[in-house]
Each structure stands twice: as C-alpha cells, then as structure tokens.
Image 1 (tube, rainbow, N blue to C red):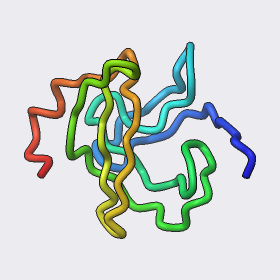
Image 2 (cartoon, helix red, strand yellow):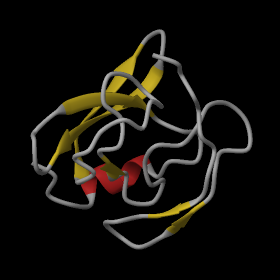
Image 3 (cartoon, rainbow, N blue to C red):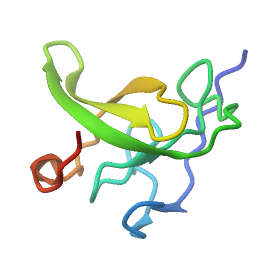
Image 4 (cartoon, rainbow, N blue to C red):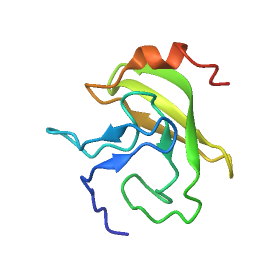
Length: 101
C-alpha cells in the first residue's frame, strides 16, 4: 500500500460547511466546525480505499500525551472506529454541543 495524502477541499456531509485543506501539516479528514468525517479510508489514514463512504460520527474526544487531542470517529453504516488527530483549527467545543453518543 502506498500512502497518498490528498490535500483537497470538501463540503461536510453533516453540516454542509465548506472545508479547506490545512495550510501546514498533514491532510484534513474531518470538518473543523462539527467534527464529523466521512468513511473514505480503509487500511490506513489517507489511503482513500474504503467503499463504505458513509458519515463517521465523532464519539469520543481524548488528549494523548504524544499526539495531542484526538477524535474517535465511528462509521454510521459499518461501525468501523478510527482515531484521528485534531487539527489546530478544530472547534473542539462542537463535541459538547451535540448528543454524539
């Protein structure tokens, strides 16, 4: 498998926000406004090999000593769970604004 980070804008499938790529660092895989994601990766981050393509709900927020804030996303269709590093411009308060569980 070859890792291909794709830095591309997208429209959030949950809140419809226009999401721009990160200016510095790795690629963005979730909406900074509502924190929802889309199930596009399969074996690893950035592979864009999943055929599921359903929305992934943020279900847990965690502070990791070595990685910083992380968001656990759970697919609304197949139930796959994946941790994602929070981006510097993520509105982490959005996690407490909706009933995520």
